[in-house]
Structure formats: structure tokens, C-alpha cells
Image 1: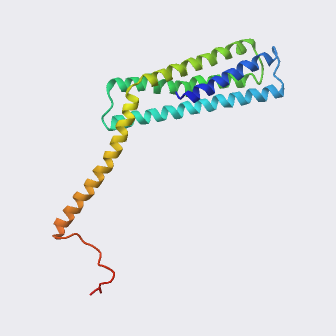
Image 2: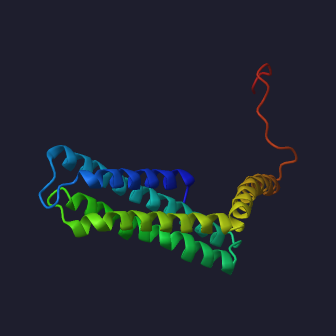
Image 3: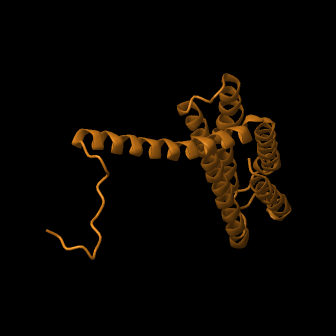
Amino acid sequence: MERGQNGAQRGLGDAVLRLLPELPEEDPPSPALSQRLAGLARRQESHAGSCLALRRRFAQILGEMRTNQVARTGDERRLGERVIAPLEQLGTETMPAASAAIAELRRAVSRTQVEQLPVRQADILRQMQAILANMLEWEGYREALSLLQEIIAEQSDVRAATLEALERQLEEILELEEPLESAPADEPKP
């Protein structure tokens, strides 16, 4: 969980808390309050999308690690169970449910819903902080990025070596003593 996302969610939670005292007891909110609630619900949905995008990036890193056979069992479990799965739950369940609860207040206000909003926001922040702690705890994260960078660099070396080997084989097949070069421009062509 990037620190910026954590701060954005904290800001959203604060905005929800500031809005709660303005809500009427049992009546639908005023159009202005309803509009502010809709904006907060959209922001919560946007945060859910960010969590899912971050989840995809970590899943891609894990996939690359598996492909390149550098993923250790502990890293796979830590990434999968403590980062990827919780991000998915936040993005597909927890945050959309919080967004729906905020949006529901546009129709009618119930004290139960109002009391649950701060609890939901605090739970989201707690989950995000736990995910961030797991990301920071994963010592292999930086190591994995370094390994992937090395693999990418080595991949270009392998490509160059492969092209050279193919060139030599082609020369051997065609029985050329010297590689074909283009004729100089000032020499007449036969």
C-alpha cells in the first residue's frame, strides 16, 4: 500500500467524519449534503480501483518471479496471502461496501448507518496499514526488483549473443569467409 493511498484514504475518512454531524436524524439529506455524499462515495470507489491496480502490479511481480524461477516459497506466501489477497479484498469487497454505505445515506439517514461509517473507515485504514507493513516487511521486494532488473539486462546480452551465433552459423552454411558488406559508393558495380 503506497503511503499516498493511505493518506488519501485517511483524508476521505476525515471528510466522512466531518459530514456526519450535518446529517439529519431520519430524513433524507439536503441536495447539497446528498451531493457531497455522492462525491465521497465516488472517491471511495476510486480508492478501491487504486487498490486493485496495486494488487495487479504485485501479482505481476510475483508472476515474473515465478517465470524466472526466483520466487521462494516464503516470498510467494507472504506476497500472495499478506499483500495480494488483502488488496483484492479491499478493492472488491471492503471499499465498495463502504462506498455503498455512504451512497445509501443519500436516500435516507439511519442512526445505525451513521454509526457504522466511522467504524468502516477505521477498519479500511487498519487493513491498509497492515498491508503497508507487510510490504515493508518483505525484504525480498527490493531484492526481487533488483533481480528483475538484472534479468532484463541479461536478456539483452542473451539476445546479442544469440544473434552473433546465428550470424556465424549462417556464414558457415553459406561458406562465406568474410561477412557480407555493402560495396563502397565510389566503386563501380559490375
